[in-house]
Image (cartoon, rainbow, N blue to C red; front, top):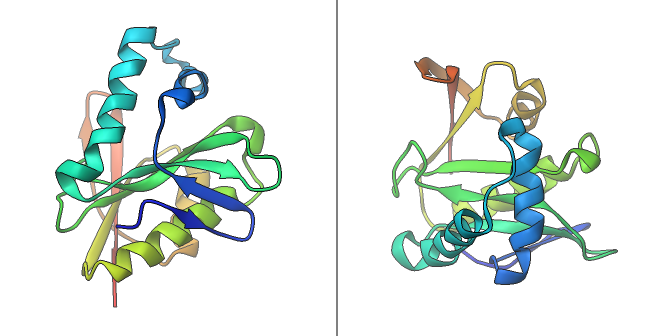
Amino acid sequence: MPLHLKTARLTLRPWAEADADDHRALTAERGDGMLSIEDNRRVIEAQVAAPVLTGLALLVINRRDVGDFIGYCGLTVGRASVDEPEIAYELLRRVHGQGYATEAASAVLDAAITTGRKRLWATVRSWNAPSFRVLEKLAFERDHVSADGRGELVWLTRSLP
């Protein structure tokens, strides 16, 4: 998977140590509190190492016009596999509703096609209507529902050409 992607408004790139504070702010918006500096460092290190281990990456999203961090998007093993990875994205609340998730996920989808993969997965909590809209625009289809300790999880899939 390419580790540098550009769209009309966004640049997607690998993680760097300099992204640590922005990542901590993003994870704090989930409502689970802010990660410790050490835990956050481990997460960033894992993101830096992932492409070497799996060929997949969650990439930092920066807006091209101002260069600010707004979230991440990419492919991950997640709940899926290296051959059929999961697309994932998370953006800061201040940029929700502006089409950035769809734009970034579309670029990642195109990059996944170039790898020769045949299918991608996505998992979304049943309450997350905005993520369902993004995935619908990208032609993902509902496959099945499961549950874990945090509630219902909807699995979607997209066949690739």
